[in-house]
Length: 177
Length: 160
Image 1: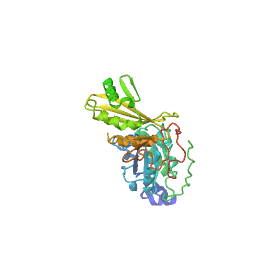
Image 2: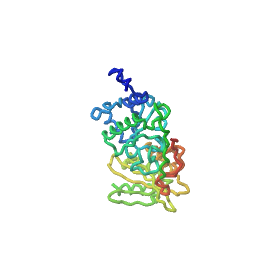
Image 3: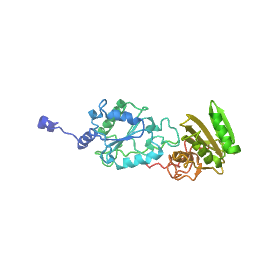
Image 4: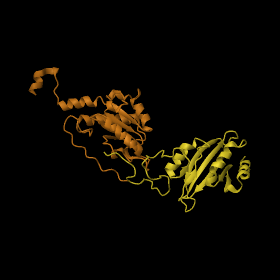
């Protein structure tokens, strides 16, 4: 590459979208949507022992307007689903969703009329975390995986505001009970 | 203590007490629904018995052609450290019971729960609304004829 050798070590060339995605993935502000027991593990994930800040996840923001990634941690009932959706809608683009734990991903052991059998019925989910509840390291792994997805431009996120060309997210049909 | 409670009830209400049994030292008494407030007030205010605490109030669905729904009152006497269980049964066609919120105010939310889950109406209740399910929900989930996974479309879910 003639241009790079001419510039020496003082400059690094990249695509603009890669640079923007690199910035975004390393400053993910989580929105804690702690609905039940998974929230305890989510707090440990942010606390000093597991310390998600080491991986560029920054502080938890309790206002959806300041958050990038919503961690839905817990059993989501139909009555709560409208609240979760309302909070998600208040988050600025681009935004991502992590479904933490069995209940959030699939209804888990709550196979009953009041619990939504998987939040992907009303939210675009980027990552599902297995476990009941998942350990904090498991959630850290999810965070790192999400960062890789963002860097690779694979994340569903919100297609409007993301840099680069993203394939339009096509929702799966909801699970019929 | 059980014998004394039952004797007092029989003396006060005569044949108003429909049925009673004792199992492992616990007394259960069945009373007609129109007598429930009187019985509860008597048990609470009698200076000897003093069942001052309504430990729990909940519904039953016997799924039987007659006397389908029941309401159970678990009482506790702080003075005597003693428990008693009062039951009353109503017909499916007219599931109405008088409220006991005037006796124990804690019955307010318990009766709302029973109404929400079984559709038993507590006449005279100050604020009989659903407590768990959304207000616009039209079914009673703990009735035996309600399917486990609910009725599709009966609960609102936001669009994706």
